[in-house]
Length: 157
Image 1 (cartoon, rainbow, N blue to C red):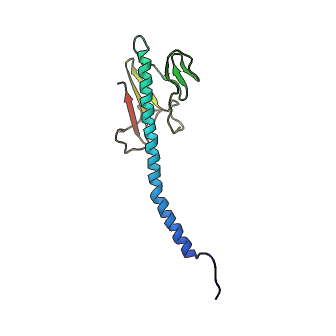
Image 2 (image 1 turned 90 degrees about the vertical axis):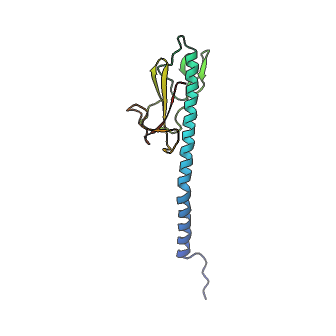
Image 3 (image 1 turned 120 degrees about the vertical axis):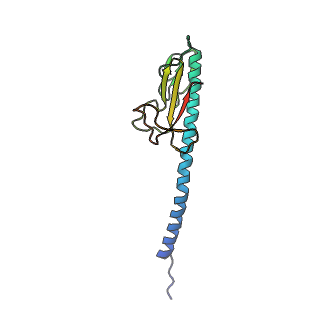
């Protein structure tokens, strides 16, 4: 009798199907966790920007919100947006940006709308449409469409 080493085709197909089934079960959960993590970062970034906006307003006379905010990655101080802050007041050392840069989005990544001198709206697109604090819709601008049509908004306190 001849002794053969190796696996039969049936054995290989069974192992491949088991591995494929496990990947199919694990991958969606992994993707959902990543989406939730990015959304959590977006919410924290908007709270950070909200605090910077309040510091800005307290430093103005009369107390008003800015007409715009610097680009992500810049320092935001009393001299405006810079690579490094040289002004006497620093609102935030680094303006946060969306964890996923999407092509065609507003270059600010987070959408800031000054409604008036005393009101504003900050908006971020969310990945997870099951998020309890998110709402359906885009960030109120034709240039800032949310791919999932789901957003998170923060307004002045």
